[in-house]
Image 1: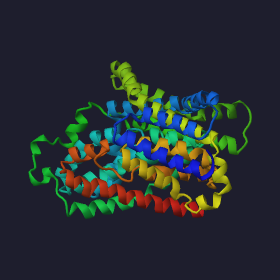
Image 2: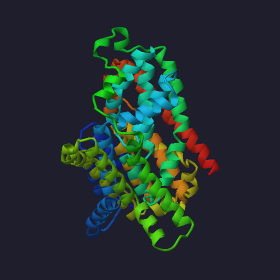
Image 3: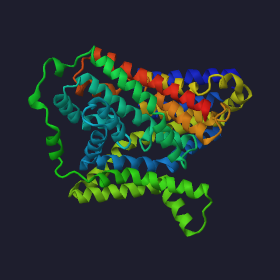
Image 4: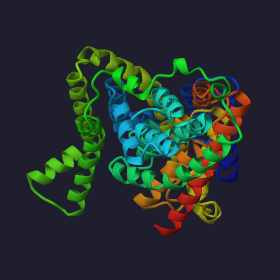
Length: 452
């Protein structure tokens, strides 16, 4: 099968994959593998080559990104257990000021979600949100939406969160993670602004259950929350597991661009690779754990991290299989020969594909990894040839992967449950907010794509 018939088969395969995941509740790992196999058969890949194609696509993902995802998740788990995530939130509050509680909440979520999953981040920071609502008198709904927005933007844009990390790997940016982090941070500006003003608007129209019937006895003060962790890590210790890896990767980039030579340059390049940089960050996190006298949690945290990232790794690897099947078919040649038609969609193509997958099956990580696997072999044909192009594609995929969050998304239920929102109000707040920030993100990505 070649040409337009192969494109039609691909579209049907994607629809079938969505139905398997969302309607029949087949695990994404199995659904993506099954669709990859069927698509390989329809694409006419010789039978004897199909096992090798599947194995190659699966193994290449683990080879390049597996350890990085594990280390990033481990750092986030330690920051949560030691109270360092709370310390980071405290730093944001001091920076922004208590007179701007909603903005502080949003930026706090954005910072904390870089190493911590947005679901976990909301649970960690929700007590702070409630304490700040009681202290400042701000709208509970406004604070909920701001926190959700900040967490979500970093979750889909900035490594070492597994979704954008896996997308960066799939698009050939495993050695340019600093660029992805920078572009992701830059592209956070529009959605954070849009989310903030939307939160202030919707907070005047929607009221949560705790506003209608407040139960102040169950809300701890901010000081009580911090006291629950004992002595919090210092600002330096809290920041080190995040900042040091970024600095190492930056130094490696400088060494490469400046063509440094000698053992110093070799050391910079060695420590600046994502695996080694995050390994250093993990080492600093372990030191933080033992300094906080919580060393007995080390084994359990490691075990829980592996359990958490296992499904993510396998879904990511399955996305790699689908990408390998596409690369081994005639689809790339067909798109290349008709590049003008596909380039007319441009940077909106990965956004729309991710948004369809996100809305249909719920998981942002699945939407990101699957879309990245599909887009990867088509990058050159679509006109995305430079590292900056690829980084913008990562962010476009991330923007689609948060458009929109509704009842099939676990994060929707975390936000509505902890935010004391009725389901209908959840659609008016969380779902509409993700639509607003997803579109705002794409406006910024589109403008940057014109400039850069």
